Length: 358
Ligand code: PMP
Image (cartoon, rainbow, N blue to C red; front, side, top):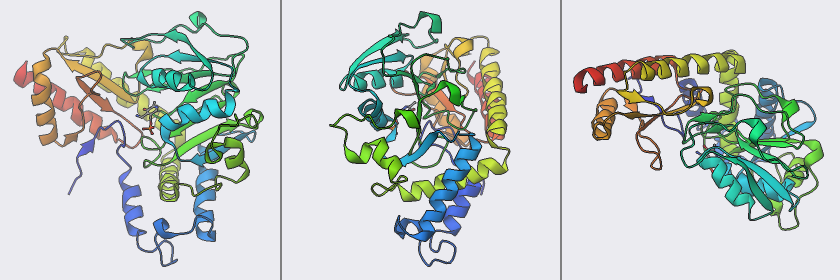
């Protein structure tokens, strides 16, 4: 039976071959007689899983040797606190507020330092502030940006070259485009969109930023201790690391990040083009220069049609298209694992619905 297409913003659709492999290996991983869920994180078998996933990830994103990759818990929101505790030094922190997630990052960082908005495009969050207009302090410990605002559908396609270390929340675009490592100090990403299942957070940290955690930083969230222990300071999210490894292998076999980058451009351009060509029946309100390739929020001209749109979409095998509660309307998330035919099916449905209800 064909599975419906899942446009959820996260936890999100996974590659079907990954689900099938995880299912096939559920009771007995590689003749060990146990599931990955049941293994010691210090066993040789899990060590293989862990190091293969790490190596594959480093290769996929061409992560330089002076960046450490950590597999942690905490989620994107957790790391909004863990980052300032580790590299904020209790001092000035600048944050570019371009949507709901960077607003939350700023609010959290304020608990641990003098965090200020370098720019703020709220409350609409439909554009990106010009880098030249950012109010940056020369003594800031770092500058926080959200590379892709999952709720508002605003993506920073190019990271700026700044004096101070750039921290990027890449939760909803990691592995959909290359990272310019010369421009960043730290990147973090929750796994439940482009990497795998909830519970795992990836952290890429430049080595020179380690060693300055505030004394109040919990040990299990101290990047230096976690790096020294090769992500085994305490029990890591072992099953989520295993699934991430399967996703990394799937991605590498399909042409890696370059192929995902090209597919993201094709999928998002097709959907925006269909929305823009609807004569105002559907609308995306984001400045075209800032439109996200991963999350496409859109509205029907008459809000009363949103519920019938969603019901019909579900019947057509197009799931989880409801917009975030704070924005309303609709949202299609087009992560790496969402196949291109899913976008074609959604566009067909947009046309069909407009013909019936237009
Ligand atoms: N940052 C971004 C960009 C996100 O999209 C999300 C979750 N949607 C988060 C942070 C928070 O992630 P978590 O729920 O894993 O804490």
